Length: 308
Image 1 (tube, rainbow, N blue to C red):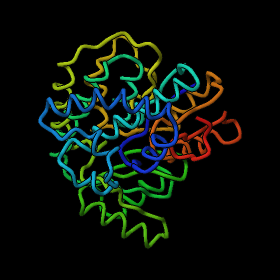
Image 2: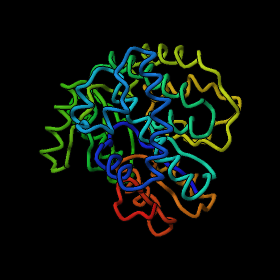
Image 3: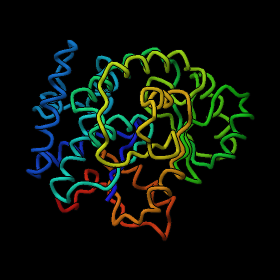
Image 4: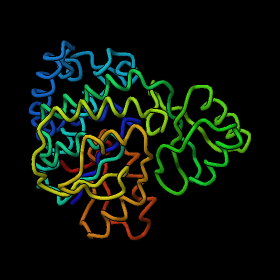
C-alpha cells in the first residue's frame, strides 16, 4: 500500500468530522494526532484547532481560510495524519508515501523523518512564510502545454505550478496575472477555478521566502525514514543525503509534477493507493494518470462507504 498526501488546495472539513463521528478508529487517530497538534498551537500562542474542529460548532473551509495565520495549515496537517494513522490501524503500515506540494510535511512525519510535533511546527513555519507570498492559484482544465500557451496569451507573469494529469493543471501568480489567465481561458472555453488560498506557491519569484523557510526547517532534528518518501516536486524518492530543508523549500519555487511521481510509485506494483486527506481530488488525478493500469485507488475520508 502507498499513502498519498495532497497539497493545500483540496481541504473540505466535513468528511473528517463525519468519519471521526462514525468510526472509532478515525476518532482514536484524530485524538492522538490533535493532542500533539494542539500542544504546538498553544506553544505558539494560537487557538488549539482540535476543540474547534471537533466541537459543537466546527468551522467550514472558508472559516479556516479567514482564521488566524497558521490554523489552516495546522488543521490540514492534522487531518492528513489522522487519515494516515486511521488507515494504519485498519490496513497496516504503507510500503511508501507520496507528498504533493506541502503534503510533503505530513508525508515526512508519516515516515518518521520528523516527529509529530516538529511536523506541526514546520507547518506553522510554512504559514508564516506563506503570509508574505503574495498572489494565488488557479485550476485550469487543460494540459501543461495548453496552459503554457494560455499564460503566454495572457502576457506572462503566471507559471504552471502543478501538473495533476494530462487535462488538469494549477497556475500560480499575482491576482492580476491570474485574472488575465482566467480571461484568456474563458475565451478559449477552458474551465478556470480560482482556489480559495490567499497565497502563491511553486513560483520562482518566491526565492527569498524559500530561503527563509529552509532556514526554519533546519532547526528541527531529522530521523531515519521508515519508508520511502516520494516527492512530486523532486520527481523522485528522497535519499538519505538529501537536504530536506531545501527540498521542502523547493515547493515554494518549483513545480509539482504528479504524473511522474505517481508512475514511479506504481512501478512497484502496490496493491492499493490511499489518499490521506479529506478530499478526493488527488485520488481522481491518480486514476487519470494510471488509467487501466491503476491499482485500487481510494479516498477513504471522502468516501462515506469506505469500510473503516
